[in-house]
Amino acid sequence: MNRILRAHIFLAILTIISGFNYTIAKKVMPEFIQPSSIIWIRMSCTSLFFFAFIFLSKRSFKIEQKDYLRLFLCAVFGITINQIFFFEGLNLTSPINTSLIMAGIPITVFVLSIIFLKDKMTFWNVAGLLLSATGAVILLLDSKGKFEGLFIGDVFILVNAISYGIFLILARQLMRTYDSVTVIFWIFLMGTFLSFPYCYSRYIDTDWLHIPTYAWLSLGFIVVFATIVNYYIGVDVLKDVSPAVSSMYVYIQPIVTTLVALYFGSDKMDGQKLISSVAILLGVYLVSKSSENKKVAKSTD
Image 1 (cartoon, one colour):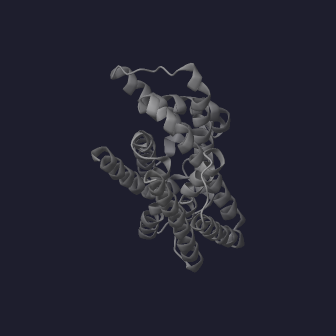
Image 2 (spheres, rainbow, N blue to C red):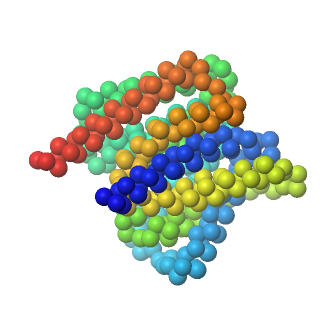
Image 3 (spheres, helix red, strand yellow):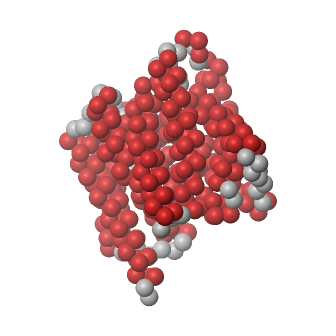
């Protein structure tokens, strides 16, 4: 129980960090640093940090050959696709839109569980899926009506959310087998090389000598808290809680994100977003609650 409580506390901390990350990242890009440059910096810095951490703490770098493919897929979905579509999407859309679409990660995890783990659907599962999908469609149509770039950004964030949901499913088995630090190091190192062709040209074109102090501090927050701390704790807690429980915390993010965005004036809440918020979050709740009840029922059979 102590480890489960610890996992929930860490997940709550990560939710707060992510809520701030959306607004902080918007303050930096694209005026001072392009999204692809941020991606390259956070990937390479995180790889170097965890390499030093493993080396100095004398932990193992070893991964069994049978797990190479799963590790590579975690790097593709959890780092490369996830990071590229997240930052490119956030660059085009708003913090609140981003957090609302990211709240659909539990839906992705549930759908993948149906496909690969043969979980059965209930009436409330279907109702939750339809409700969340309706909220997402309302949000996307509202974005398309306002600005085409906003709509494209929302679609990118949706791809990112699906990719991260796949990563949560893939990573849990690795977390049970290896040290989480070792797994994080390898997936970030692979992700750094995989994203190199995409990130390099924008990175060398950035005017690094004329970036203001607050932009450097914002970049530091993205690398240290939103990346190193986020991935270390987020992946480590998979040892103690299921991907469904871990991803469920994502639907709390819109509350934090909205408060932060409104305070700093980086976004605003309107009627359409409010309707989308209620539909998406209620849908996620119905899916998560129904899935939890099914597991409890199975355990008492």
